[in-house]
Image (tube, rainbow, N blue to C red; front, side):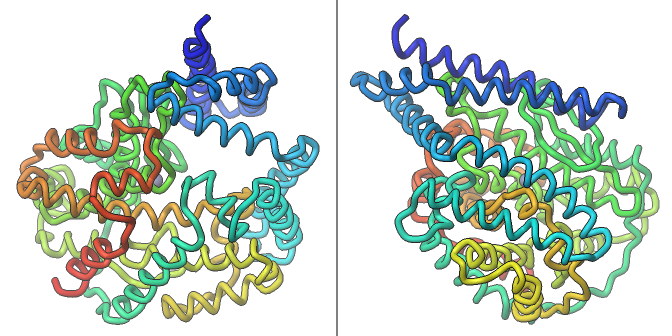
Length: 488
Ligand code: ZN
C-alpha cells in the first residue's frame, strides 16, 4: 500500500476507537443505568488502552519514520506528520512504569480531593498534591523545554504558547482589570431566577434554533456536569443541567456547549483522515463556546430578540422590563468561585491559578505555602476574603487530576473570542442586526471559513494572525469589557 494511504488507514482505525469510546462515554453520562458503571469503565479503559497502543507501537514508529522521509507530501500531510511526531515523542519520553504510578496516584488524588473539599480539610489533600507536582516537574524535564519547565506542560493544551507570552498577556490584562473591577457599582436588582426544568428545556431549544446549532447532526440532553462530545463529524452532541433555582445556568451553559459543538461540526471532514480533525487548541475551542455564550448570548441584540418569547414561556417575567432582565444576566461582581464568575472577573480567577501553578512547577512556591498564596492573591486582585480552603484553593479538580497548564486556556479563550469578534464585526457591519433578527447563517459561515474548517491544521498563533492580521492581544477584550461594564 502507498505510504500516504497507510497513514490515512492509521487515523481511520483511531477514529473508529474514538467513536466507540465517545458514544460509550456519552451514554454513561446521560442514559446508563447506575449498576452498569464498573463494567462500562472497564470497557472504556480497555478500548482506550488499545487505541493508545496503536499510537505508540513500533509499527507506528516505522510508519512515522517513512512519512517523515517522504518528500512529496501535501502541506496538510506535512502538518499531520509534525503533530503526530511531537505527540509520539512526548508519549515515548515518559518511562511506562512511572506513567503507571502517576495514573494510579492521580486517581487516588481525585478521590482524596473530593473528600478534602467536602470536609474543608486541606491537610489530607496536600500530600497527594506534593507528589503530583513532583511528577509534573519530572515530566517537564522528560519533555524538555528551552526557558521554563511550565512551557513543556502547556503543549498539551495550547501548542506553541510559552510562559514568556502568557506573562505579558496576563500581566497587561490583570493591570487593566483590577482597577476596572474596583469601579463596579453593586447591583440593585434581585430577581427570582427559578424556573421549572421542562420550561428551561423549551427555551434552550428555542435558543438553539436561533443560533442554528445543527440538531440533524447533534442532540441536546440533560446531565449533571454539562459537556460537548464529538461522536463523529456528523454527530456532535451537547448536554446541559437544568438548575431549577437559577435558569441562567442552563440557558447560557447550553449556548456555551453549542459553541463548542458548532466548531466541531464545521471542521473540514478531510482533516479527520490525517488526524487534524479537532480544535486548534483548548483556548481556541473555548473562544468558540464563549463567543456563543457571551459575545452573542449575553449581548443586548440577542437578548432583546429572544426576551418576548422567554416571557411567554415564563409568565413570572411578564412584568420584568428588559433592562432589568439584561442587567440581571450581565451582573458582574468579584467573587470566590471560578465557575460562578462573570465574564468581567473570570480572567482574574484564571490569572491567579496560572501564577500559582507556574511557581509550583518552577519550584518558587511549595505546596505548603499554596493556601496562603491563594488567599493573598484573591485579596489583592479581586478584593475578596477567602473564608476557608473549600471555597479557596480546594475548589477546582484540575490540580488533583494532574492538569497543570490547563487553566490558561480559559482566559485565552476570552482573549481570542474578543479578537475574533472584533474582526468579525469589522467585516460584517450588520453583525448586530443579524443577531437581533436571528439570521445566524452568515455568522456561522464566517466562523466556518475563518476559524472552524481549519481544525488542527493551524496553530492558535497562526490562526489568530491569519484572521485578525495581528498577534494575540488582550486589547480587544479590554475594549469590550470596558465598553460593556464601565461606560455603558
Ligand atoms: Zn467550554
